[in-house]
Length: 284
Image (cartoon, rainbow, N blue to C red; front, side, top):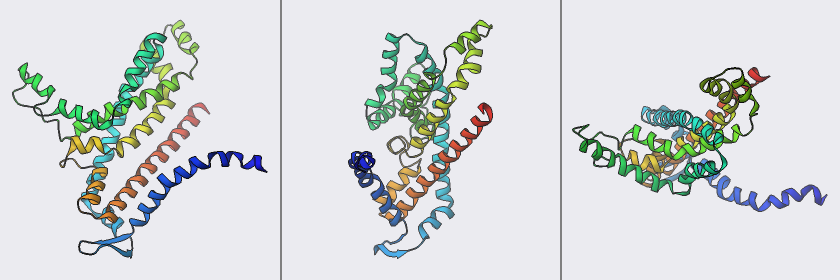
């Protein structure tokens, strides 16, 4: 009997920490989202669905959610387009050079996302490094607006999220059989054909898993949209922040946060089921 419960007893501290730091705050946020709010009375004891109805029926919130998931989708596509070839080059490199490139890839993860985003703010500002260089070269006559735009947020998010895609694809490539590339080369296939017809199909599980990670992190990102988007480009995370700390409407902010969580989970589960069904048809 003690042996049956040994794994649970050994994992009890980690489970308790998980419950205390994640499930309890999440449950409290869920309960809070059903309360009403008055500007003179604060959080009221009334329990209803008014906050969810307000968010789901207001075009203002529809635009914010559409912008958030649009940014996450574009970021995911760019990370997949950049990260897949980069992971393949990393996979084909010799061990001594591979270690150095791997350090370059995962190095940004060792730096705070706030610091990296501030670096992009210096680069993308109207008097930033990029605009100053282009104007000094007389390629442009006035600064290109990149700060407080959706494009600027996407550029910074790609830089932040690309390591997750590279690592996922690189791990998938390590599970493939190197003999398949040699067989394709012996049959006269060129490098491009080998990559798109042999390597890429075997790397797709890594691309898809990396896409799920990048999409979920991009949709819920806060620091990058807050710094580079400012008050002009609002996403769901910055809207939740404003509701909690500016208007002090905690129940509405909790409802928005819960809807974001549910939406991201629905996208991830639907995408995962679609991918599993597709692979079952192709390889089953």
